[in-house]
Length: 193
Length: 317
Image 1 (cartoon, rainbow over the protein chains, first blue to last red):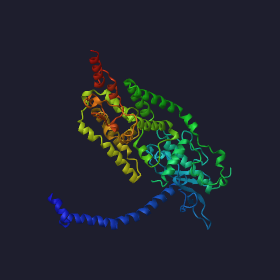
Image 2 (tube, rainbow over the protein chains, first blue to last red):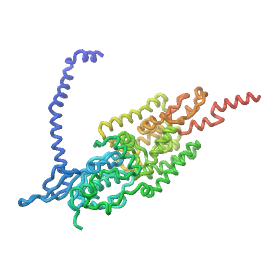
Image 3 (tube, each protein chain N blue to C red):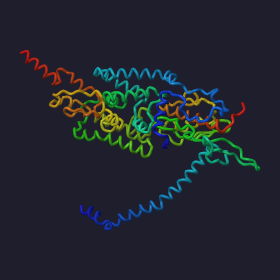
């Protein structure tokens, strides 16, 4: 009881308290802005890595551009010519924002070459209760590699169905298909048949 | 990842998706720009009827289950109730893994109603669970939920001498833990937009048979504890039960009480859920297990009928 009264009356009797306060103040003034400032380039670098994963041969990527928004992947620039467009990368949540699973949208980064063949899928965010054994597995993303944008993307047919996670897998597949078709329609010419 | 779509729009999308309204999608481009001719070979997404036809066995089996559950409840039949519990564990639990989850409550708060045309059986379960709670109270907890059914079956098999009798005051206090878990979960979800913690506060995922060793150890301990403290999880810990309990405060058909109930404790002592305190029934704790209602109807055990019979005898003599 006396201790409590001392503290209330005269905080400086407890120099330890002041020291803790000083530490907090230093943290908020110096360390926190530094952390926030360093977090952005780190996130950018991680994103660059994801784009590179979808297009291993690409030498450069555009900023997000166009409507619907996509990132363009370019090959090496050779003797003064414009670098060749290798394909597009895009977020399913930006191209098919209303598609939802058990709990909200499933955020995926999709790569597609200029002829409408998917180069890969990266599942970055989801709140699916049974996501951990469906869309979060490497097998899920892997099965979309080399799929044609004209495919059906239907679980049980050309996409592996996972019982107990039907809605999650169906929604994710549909989001990939719809966003890929939307991107193709807006930004690519169909290949000669 | 927080979606920045307005709540009303998200609600509309959930509803329209459920009703099979077409045209709600993000396709913004004009068809004239469609050099790909996706529409020519585009498989139109299956209609509600096509999906329903694919899922006919599940819809029919759930219907049969729901009918058995309702007959057991309305007829107050003990054998049918145990049949319901066994079917629940076997079909809704082990076979389908269809249990309403706290994630459905959390999702509903932000506009994802757990009704999906791809899983009509589960959607019917959700509708059945909510509607029955509004009408009668936590019938869902008492006989539909596969985990509750499992612990009730454990309870029926385990000899009574293993079971610990919890003091009423402690029981009453412990019953509030589930509300703390519910509101804690809601607050955490709204602040962080993160729901993957659900596996640590509810064991329903066990029927999916997919989890880490630590989680399995946790569920093992919970089931062992349920042997000694009956329906431990449902009574004290389940956030979904807490949510349904809050809804059940509104329920239409409550259990009736006689004036004699204030001096008789037969039902209070029989209730395995700690839901009776003298004349009052604590609706959020009651799972409509029928135990007290079977007693009310008993001409040989309920004082109401015994006193009535006695008065009649006196009048005759």
